[in-house]
Amino acid sequence: MAGTVGEPGDRSFFLQARHGKRLTSVLLEKAQVIAIVERLGLLLRELKRIDPNFMITSIPVDDEPLEQPIVEEFRVGLISLSWLSDREVVSIELQATSDQDENGESLFIQDPENGPDVLQVILTAVQTEAFIKRATNVVNAGRPPCPFCGLLLDPRGHVCPRANGYRR
Image (cartoon, rainbow, N blue to C red; front, side, top):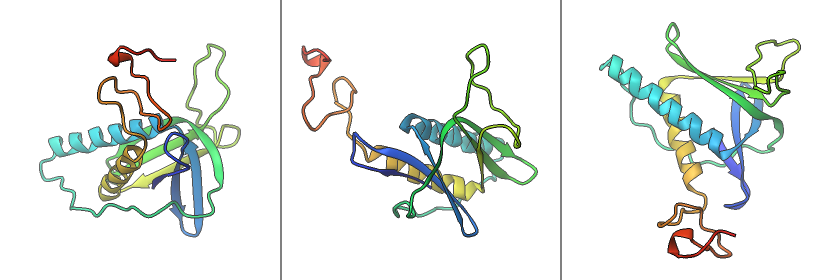
């Protein structure tokens, strides 16, 4: 599940996954949550296009808070999404931020012994659809955008560049 801690404008975004009694929470950026939602949506649409019989039943939106206590395992750096067709599930791999290679590019390191921490989450198509709905609601619960410039409205005031103002 996706969730936040804090007030709009000063929120921290978390993903939580449960396996048995173990709860894992990882910290990530709002833009990363948005990217995951967009890519998962594309994946499901493509699966429906390829197989017209691929159906997802109607799912209620989960609006429960994150499970407590929230203990950050790591900050997410790289994200990998894939469809495992043999099992008909989505695999989301979240890798901790790590050092960059000598060219300054981040690498997805698949070395469980010496590499950075990785959280792999396996979701069915129904669970994926539920995750998309919840994460979309979480992202949209923040500050609304200005109808003119698209920048987020700040409760302390907003100087809109499109309203003949300037951005400080």
